[in-house]
Length: 296
Image 1: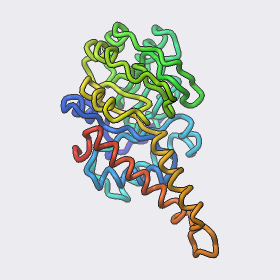
Image 2 (image 1 turned 90 degrees about the vertical axis):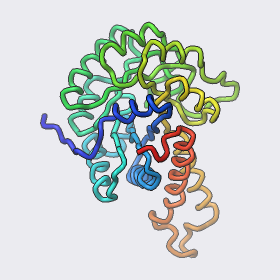
Image 3 (image 1 turned 90 degrees about the horizontal axis):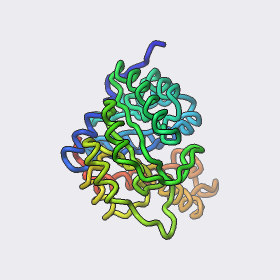
Image 4 (image 1 turned 45 degrees about the vertical axis):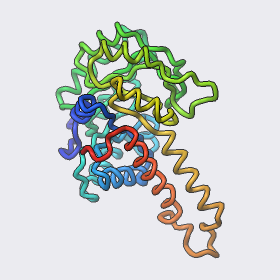
């Protein structure tokens, strides 16, 4: 299959490596539609901040497919005259085939998530993805251990990753590594024990490359900053943006600004604007925490 490629997208390894060496983390923000993507790109450009746009298999299906997502991002890069580094990343690719589809469509980075398989199968499949990805200069993320919570129907129990597995996985040539350290997808419940920093130190000592913190939404600021100091160089955020968008939209509607008698506030461009502004505000706050703001 002929690969659709757009030169303005960058391989994510460069920006993650730079973050790892500089002791900060680049933000990976999941996109869900046009408004999400446009808001994030505008915020990144305005603040001179590198960004990884992530799309899960569920979001890709919702948005119309891999090619639609890649084309949307590429066209926005041109239309908005984006000059900061932008990577388009498949988040939690569940199969080797899904990773190949993303690469063929023009994604510049993919994650193969084989954490729900036995380690040997995870390792073998990751190698297959790597072989295909490197041919197109696409960066690859792998995962060991499991991330708690649910992501696109895959439920993780929050298994802490094994440093020995980290050593073996990194030896394949992956660009960055996700590892279970007590983090979860979605809102953090009451009584959550927090991140396991001892495990993070051990895994980072074995991996010696940029690591990924999934489930970045809702982790206390001090834990985020400490995790970055121990080797976390990419932080994935989705739920936090969704909540901010929903709250701002709810406030607009509850104020009656969408009612016909109050003008044309029902126009989607007006109705969705408060939510889009909330996405930008959240992006600016979190990238300040991560230390990546202004680091393009």
